[in-house]
Image (tube, rainbow, N blue to C red; front, side, top):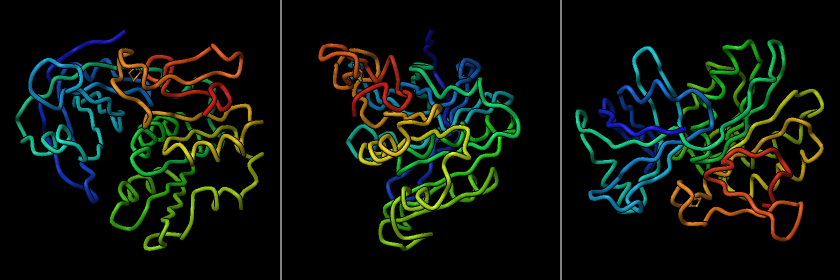
Length: 259
Ligand code: FES
């Protein structure tokens, strides 16, 4: 189920090096509800699907009909997108994909959210939704260095927040897994993560046995709408079985697809 609409830009600004937050307003926001899903945004002129980018949903405000996305401006399309002014309109298709399952989470449970770099944004709406259910949420977020860190204060308002940077210029030096290694994982009811592939691989190995550990592979998407096959992942069932990240995911249970 997806819809298309024009949303108006109400904010578009840089919040970390090459990382921008954009707030969009319009009726399509009524359709967005599941954390971990994404939208497909037109970032260039014309009708070629290559001018669209899949970008995860970072926050939703149904009352104001506003959607927040956080994206990295790195190619011609997203750099042009980062220069779009307040009041301009953006063509948005969505919601797309299967998000993080949260129906089974109950009040009083402990959940850990683990994010890396541009994989961090979808965890924000997830955390808000879990917290509103009474779930106790801890966050472990990894970035390359201090200049790349974003949303640290916002996450801290929702629960315990541990930040790591590779060079130690903000928070603790090291990787998100260094923080997790100090904890007793059997005390958690669920783990949800999103970030670069090496991080997700490391988490998958550690939490293979956990009954509710989920990863979002959104960084590996290409077209986002099932057309390019760049996102295909094999599944453990057989050599020929596969799933598409953009339609079957981006969220999978750990072990569901081969990384
Ligand atoms: Fe193109 Fe999935 S991202 S088919």
